[in-house]
Image (cartoon, rainbow, N blue to C red; front, side, top):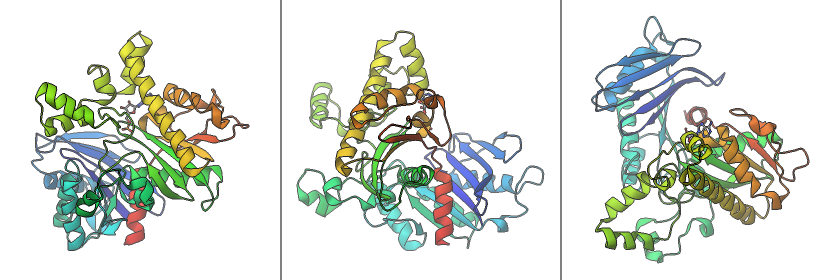
Length: 396
Ligand code: AMP
């Protein structure tokens, strides 16, 4: 089967055409600046990357351009769109009703729409992508794969907040967790790669990128994760604060006359390592360079990030009463040698020792702990698109 995987943001979308038999990517790319001016990037497998500037007032025009270039006579990888068997969509929030991937029908559309409340930045864009595909390729099956789904196996003790129960009853306020497609893919891949037993294993996945989260996966099921009702909870991220005392909000609101929306924008977009370095950068490569050149704020931000990751890993060792393997993934997890080294330096009490030579690896499945380390530490590159394609095939 050929599956078109679509990941829509508010003004951008990423796409991949995946052959599910070989699991190879046939073409991939992105549309940027949707609703502003518009730019399409297209990369057929083994071919040249091309960029096309063209007006994309909405996601519908953007997806139409993707479909056109996929069947383009010169560089297209398809003879006709009939060859596309299904479309898999990344959707941020499935709330408490959509707890696994679904084939999209009117009811699923309505629930995804209801979840816009919980994922106001992403769900509306995800819906635009779904509706555009339904309009442009009528009759083709569309599948929604949720960032929240993998975490739905968490027990109540992990997902309940310590607030009055009425808010859970009335509004389903609880921890949902995100990056679930990545945590699912990476934990499965780690179990396979390291020869662990899927039904008797304890794995911690650290997905560290611009957005970052950690999850505890026991016997292939998620038992806890660091993000919450929204992706704001947990680790210090590129621009998100992660955990903090909620009273900080009231204090700043009172001192600076800010309302709750301004404060949440501050916590989502102006905080994290970006905010901690007075806006120097949210990119760990820039911060690493600045720290190496003596910038103390950058060094402190990297330290705080790594310390928080190590604390979450420690708490998940407690949650599972042990750990067999720790898997690093995401842009920083796969490439940030120094960040990995710093994080692992806190885990000596677990009998973990890092193989410094192995830790120089990046971007492929690789064990980075020494053979006598009591817990195996590995790099496991994530592949959310492949996971979405697999889920799509399973449902159609
Ligand atoms: P992601 O959101 O998973 O694409 O990750 C993006 C982040 O990965 C960037 O913001 C960088 O901070 C980080 N990153 C990419 N390459 C490196 C690297 N070589 N060293 C440290 N961080 C990196």
